[in-house]
Image (cartoon, rainbow, N blue to C red; front, side, top):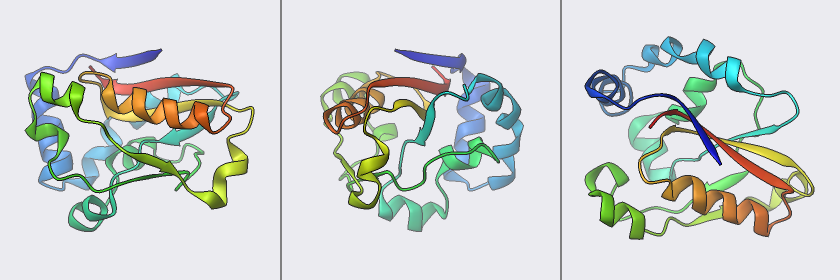
Length: 151
């Protein structure tokens, strides 16, 4: 189950482009309050990771930027490098593009019997949230919910 706060429209598309791809990191603060309002205290907050290559190229994880001072578990999951970014694929290609997440062994015990809230920026097809949730459930999570800024 995923909840999206806003609709992905032209204004949001422009925001995401400036934030993620132009690197206007100050834009992270625009939606932090809205995201914090949606985060329940009884859930372990886990941001969707970016690949190491994306982290180096962009200089930040856009989801962590959106979380602001919200408490979350950093580096719980690792995302393997992809040949092509999701944003470069059409809907059908995104649905079939298996994303590979693994659990960081240092944090594996934090998952057991936890209720987890996966947080991401954009929900397009649900592929990212579904794959990450599956990995968390397969590693002992009791429940996994999703929260995205927009859909």
